[in-house]
Length: 449
Image (cartoon, rainbow, N blue to C red; front, side, top):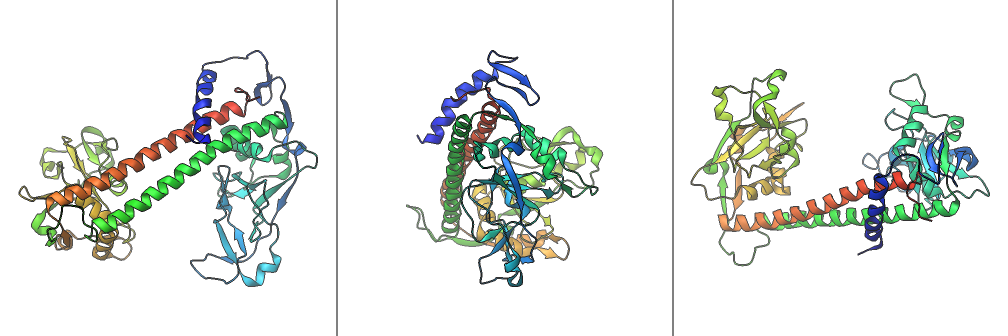
């Protein structure tokens, strides 16, 4: 068990105990920033931050549009969010403007979005290392800590992304435009915060950093598992790699031999949705999941003559329309018997014939694979909106193994999906716990020293 996981488990018990306590406890005092320990102070940010430095705007371009030989880049305002600094969120500086660029992100500083949309203004991120080839624009601030201050910058970074202080910073932003807001330096530096000793600040920052390290490892592991799954899909779903015990040749077969298509609900108005005894599968359920998620179904009122649109266990579903050919034709399979379930009108279904010896999950994975996505993009037709004609879909030919091998391949990929889902669940629970820990540690409700 790594250090981050130990921190999570040890503090979760303290967090639960603290959550059961209410009222003003002994050793605490009521202040303008809420209840804090008696030995904490209330100060404004200006007592610790000497200056908020600003970069300059320069001409720049995304690498996808033009490649420059040099490495100098200007940060986007999206380079900071939720306390994180994303160095890759930058654009190459036009050569003629390199000399104008100034102010590199320095280690142990906080970068703050001083000018942005109402939702994003005030976002901030902690900088771990020096970045010699990056520069700040004029819409980002960088903190310069007052000489002799005992503040722990990383602790301050965690404090600024708590719900309370994010809200305070955003509420302080002004501007006549509804789409762009600004934060005043004076207003920002006058923000009052609870102020523990430097030693306690560092202890809090160390604990939260350990949890962040655990989250980073989980993200890396999830990314690695996803890459492995994609590689497995490419190998197994094309027959490049055969599973042990299977040697039979694959057969190329058009979809029209395997089954028939049917449409989703049509002619519905807003009043039909959100009520009724029937349910329907939203198109985002089809686009997002390989297997239809039963928890993500909506109610709809249907007439008896629409029974031909009823779904059935084993059916495949496709979003048949999208604004880009890359997003049309995602596939999901229904693996449960759910009575009175219909399909969204933006999708179409495919039902295998009763005598078809197939595994629906294998086909769902195939259509979501690189080969499958390429095939569906070719079928997509349109100008401003792309659609897949059912007649063209029925002529689509797929190379497929016998049912037993289909099932074996689908089982392997399904197991890999289950492992990824388990890791994602663990990561999400750790994120939730971190938020609770921040609330308790940064208010002094839980003490580390």
